[in-house]
Image (cartoon, rainbow, N blue to C red; front, side, top):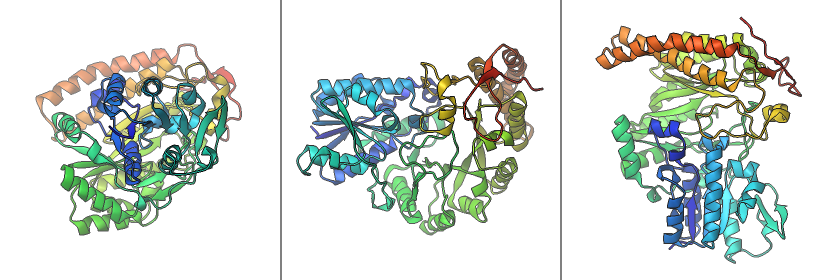
Length: 505
């Protein structure tokens, strides 16, 4: 039995795309909260939905642990939690109802909770935490158990109902000194299940870490319901110590830094590289970076020194017009130069691409495809513009949003507003872009002698046959009637008027 049962509602089983990828990562944000609450004297247990089959396993955990408090605490370091996939929200509601049936006090926290706390309270939660959760959760538990006196309104960062009336307390200041937090509660995770999946599918074992919380940049489509524009970083030494601990304790072969941006503070990466060398650590990692920051002196060399394997850049678009409309703050030439420098230092490059932003034309799409051809990244990830509450983008298209306001899963790719082209077009563009990317990449590897296996030869042949079909199918979708929104002129439109989408050649 435990006082507090932690869970989260991201079930890999409900996301076919990521289930097939077989790269599961434990719910890091949940593990941080669990560790923090345990450090303050509470008996805790963890239900890890990542590898669970359904919510029925949560019901079983409730029966075994018989907790007084059920805490559904989402992993705020998982970008899919920020996207608030509909199937996962439904799972959270189901879990809340199950916990109420088990006579628990139900507490929920996460990005979607911060945006839609009313819906979670209606679904059965007793308390919703808005914003960063660790301290708010501890103070709430202290109040519920009588350790802390006074009204619940004294606990900042909460939403709850009193006689059916919603009460929202004041803003909870974020934790500034991240080094004071205990390590995530890795001991509660079934590490061997994760390891077996990674080893069987990829031949190595990866775990996730974070060095920061938040992002100070102003991309107008990026939601920040937890930390807003604030940004706090751990010390490089504490990060390296944790890397060494994970390697020695769990035998990890690789780390994913789930930060929005790794090494934003000037000089942080250089110090990190020195600490890695001093510790004699050899642990490859992947991370996210901004093209303009990577071009600062010494940044890429420091990443190489630290053992970086691949940097994912939020390239988004090959059209400067679109980048400017996004308030991205980067230039096309910076993206190309950052990719080239990374490659010269032996570091792979990934591009995140985003199609479907307001005003995107066929010519803009062609510019993005040309950027991928020119830079030849080692991997790409493709999404379409996703209106999230609290963003300038969301406000601009709010009037166009229908009943569907969230994707069901990460491969949905639905246009939830009157985008430049149709949902069918962008789904076909996703397939066509990946087909060309893989055909070019596999062809280079075969030609350069990096992989001349029979398997690779057959893959190239299959893609060569598939690619013309993808191009033709996209052309057909492109010319189907569709009513989109006005092209951008000088930034985000204040309103999103429905007009025929330009069909530039």
